[in-house]
Length: 135
Ligand code: HEM
Image (cartoon, rainbow, N blue to C red):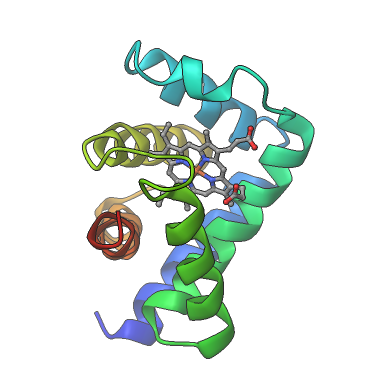
């Protein structure tokens, strides 16, 4: 799959998922339950705001992977907010994040298939690798 096909497949899947209001809350539930290490990070979080920000960030990720300057700038900021000097998100925690995201998308996208899964995995693996490198 070319980069632009990958992006197209991911974004159309994300639109189907995000059309259901429970998509992001359901992701956070799954993410929290995936390890006892996760919930303490979100003790003081305003989830109404957080849900909006995450959806925005997921949309931009597709653009960041294909090198769009605006999206790359945003990703760089995200990596900084999550690094050891700020939120201090240890690198191993991203595996829980990715698994929770893929499992939630699988549940919410009624057209889910191996090509779509590949698009999600490839895109967010790139994003995660980037965030980890900047820890
Ligand atoms: C590539 C993966 C991730 C993306 C795209 C992402 C995205 C975001 C975004 C957009 C925000 C809000 C803006 C900001 O504070 O930077 C945020 C906040 C946050 N993220 Fe992540 N995140 C990721 C992985 C993780 C992981 C693995 C953890 C582990 C616990 C985590 C914990 C947090 C926390 C604690 C906040 C602050 C919540 C608050 O304001 O109370 N994130 N994230």
